[in-house]
Length: 171
Image (cartoon, rainbow, N blue to C red; front, top):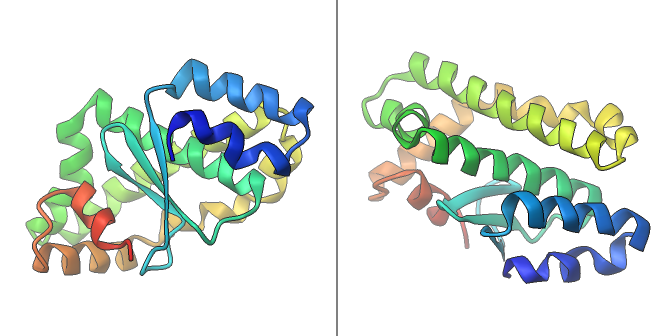
């Protein structure tokens, strides 16, 4: 699904009044990002699969959660663009070197920053209730041990970077 499809993705799920600021935000900040829908083999909602591409799990139907996930994953793309070495090393290199503690620290920091951005974006777009009511989505920040195992399995299966890890998680 390409960026031109963000409107189609959310059109029948939001009012025009809700949809317009979302499209404006996306077009202003992430117009070069492609959005793809896949079924995942692991319990994940989304991930980045290239420097300009986001994969969303097809199980996600709630429009507010879709917007939150797009913001969250877009922040990961920004983190990668700002410092590809730091992002890949923190998220992938530490696992490749069997360094659990540095991975857990980097993972928590990277996920926390992405969640902060996503919750702020939701508020900025007028979805304050979502931002206030769904703080449980921060649970991913504490899932480092599980994610470490998934990345380790993908490395064992031949993944060479984080993008390949996410691709291995897609059915």
